[in-house]
Amino acid sequence: MKHEYYDKVDKERFSKEKLYIHENRNSLERCPYCAGSIKDRKVAVYRGLIRALYDVYRWCGVNRRHEFKTREIKHLLGKNEYNRFGDLVRFGGIVYKPKEDGESEKALFGINMARAKEFFAGKRDIPLQIVLDQISGEILSEVRGYVGDFPELSSFIGKNGLYDHEKPVQINLL
Image 1 (cartoon, rainbow, N blue to C red):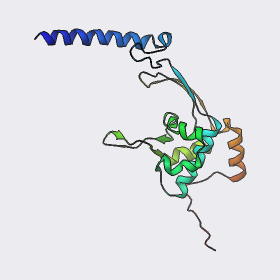
Image 2: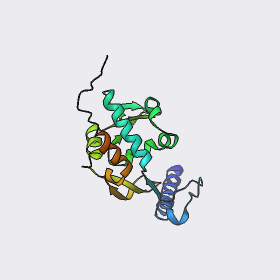
Image 3: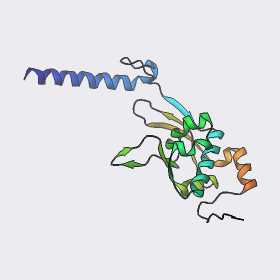
Image 4: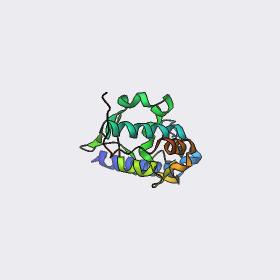
């Protein structure tokens, strides 16, 4: 009986502390318990990451798959792109983490090929920058844009044509 009262008091105190920390995360900047950063974080895509996404989109189309491990596409990514590829999950639903029984496997990703095609064709916008609450993982704000906001990639697609994953791949064996 005695423990139930103390457990209830501890839970109430913890709830109040947790709420205070969350509401004041930007002024506190660090968690008082673990010293981890709790300040809101800006995350932005950059042209190298979008170019890598285009290369992965083409790789998926050629290989007739839409789910892959990062080690399978490592050759398409630079060091920064390899480290930041997981951030793309938060940017417009083009990249996702497949879940099995509610759990996602480490380093396993998928691409929604239809959304990727729309984005690279300039018909779909995605967030280019988001502000992320590091405690809850919630996206607080975003700045959206189109593939045209990356002139280098737009000119590459204009020169080489937009890759279409729905067209059959022709392999010249001769």
